[in-house]
Image (tube, rainbow, N blue to C red; front, side):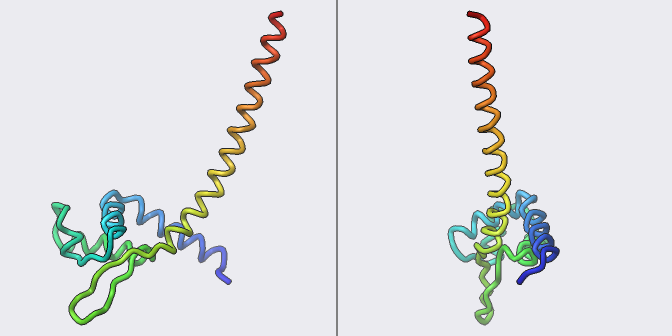
Length: 119
């Protein structure tokens, strides 16, 4: 069983990795399939060491993994970490939807009572 602190640390590193637009674009590229560092670097005006740093952050956060096939080391997305972040966000989405639904009901009741008061 994963300790709560470990889970929070993992979420923190996931959201920290996702906070950068370059890393999000790299993940979007990997949604289409495996890619090498050179392939991932193509759309960016950035040095290979710069892209490699972004890839290391994504790898450390558990969002991607690198294959080990001789000299060919393709990167691939790891969906599990994104699913964990999504389930965490889902709790709050549900909470806010419930609160907004209650607010909506309250406003409808206020409108009804206002209309009855005018009569």
